Length: 142
Figure 1: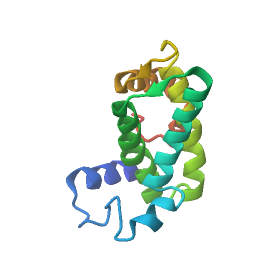
Figure 2: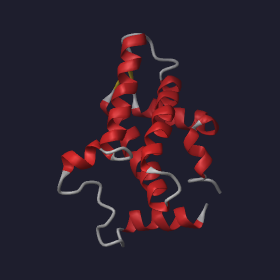
Figure 3: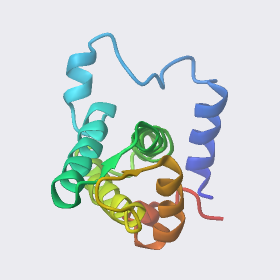
Figure 4: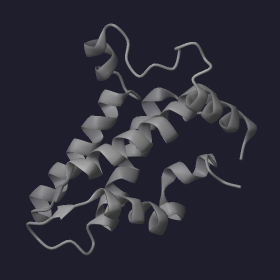
């Protein structure tokens, strides 16, 4: 694992950064609208779900949405931004691509009218890892 990501994950886990890694600021409306923020990530998840619903009448369960949101924000977008490796505006496109790939994989065995679970999304991460754009950052490599 790259030392910069090791340090960032440690600070996120132990909270030793004195609160500077908070998800939201006092002006949530502005913060949520910026690219590379939790709000932008949520919009990408919602847009991918809408696409699935429109094309195949498949929805995401709340656990699937939250699994994507928490893991992609805390484990991918935030560390990449803190490392300064990618501009915030670029992260939105990378994650949008990967969310669509993951949801297509997660829903591959889901029948029309059914919902995709968080477990199916977790399995999709494992099966799709090498095809995900985020894998190029070496976040979780040995």
